[in-house]
Image (cartoon, rainbow, N blue to C red; front, side, top):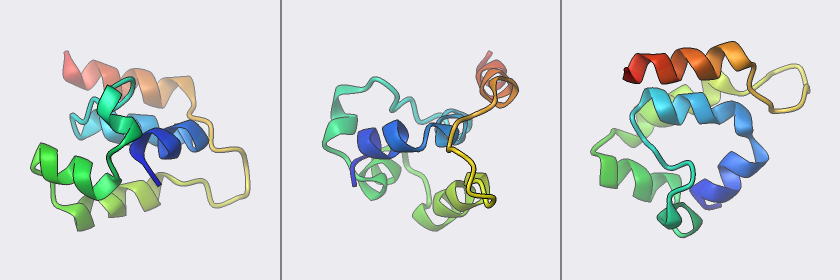
Amino acid sequence: MTVDELLTCHTVLIPVFIRHRMHCIGCPLARFHSVRDACREHGLALDAFMAAIEAAKPNDGSPARPDAASTVAALEELW
């Protein structure tokens, strides 16, 4: 699965990417890169990033949509 496919299907993961300074949202390479590729390109440890991904997934079967507050908080960390 590419980063683009992952973020399209599981938008709740967008803040995780932003918090890790992975600006893959809208990047043309996201259509081709796997999470492994993206971690390598950004110099991140794959295991640690995957743990953050797993922690962000909803466990209750609810739709994988982020709440606005978590997205805003992740963006504010960049400023």
